[in-house]
Length: 440
Image 1 (cartoon, rainbow, N blue to C red):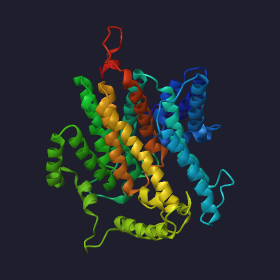
Image 2: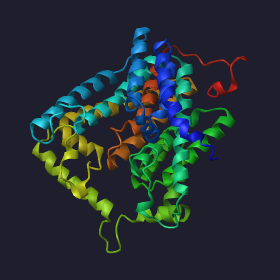
Image 3: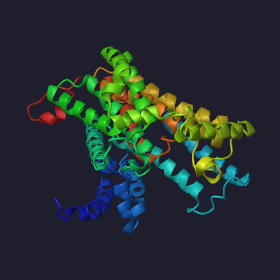
Image 4: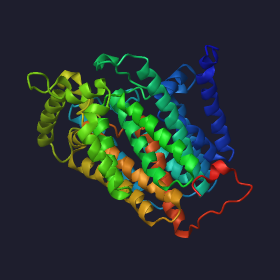
């Protein structure tokens, strides 16, 4: 509308962070979490805060404020093994970082500006978000509200991605037209985020009963899948296809049939640019195209590195300092990167994290009676399948922007798993807003 109001949005949002810090400390830390969630993936908006005092640290400040306020208020964490696993992982990564420096693979993290320390610090914000959510989400209403805010946040990301994609002509695929997206890390990372949450809500909607909310929900899924398609990420496509198959096996067998039909007809259905992107794994001479060849070369180099020190690795955060194919800073496979940097020990801890995430989501899906909790469990399980596949094509795990909201949902699932022990299906009352009963 060219009113100029948009120029003030970052300032208003920045002021909102300080307001929510005081609100949280005033005894309402849940409100601070609600305010926090939409900003977790929207890195390009948060980057505007850097011109203001402590702007670059506002997310960290609010997360810590929520945790401190919750502890002062006497709130307690629901039972979960994930706290201990994260604590062990964080400590191990910290000492691994120093070990890498001692081996000469990276500078010593003596100063907060060192890249390896910044990498560790940014990574550790993810478990802090997880702990904050576990502390303040205490009842069914809070679980429901977190899911609703996640949906609204996803819609804003979708809007940004689609507007950017549709501003370009896509008569044919062109790598130079791909945009970094609102997450600010690149189209492949954006694709992983979109695929995860498209599949989360697709699974979640299996238990939504009210027709109008199912229509709204499936519209969100369709929009998100459309945005995913125009990221032109082959890893994102594969993650979606695999997760649709899992969803079909677990809940709706018709999806398996539809998936089979799609796999036989997709070239006639998808846009030309998407078809070109998928088919360009090999060039006209039969050789791997540049992007695919990069991965093969990176993995071959990583194999040599793993064999050199398979137990402890080269040290956390060290890979980005080495000389690699086309000066790339990661292995294009998170599991390989974990093995290279932190060895077999780090990979085992990472697998424990994944196992616990799958466990709590599947248990909630199978054992809960409340459809809200069952939908949360199934959606989270399917989203985790998407996450695992996406991380086979690059590091999508250590980015707060990609995984932050996922861990918010994991925390909500842990609380829901605790609540289901004495759950009773909610009754609709005349004085409760209709929009807040959509899962009843």
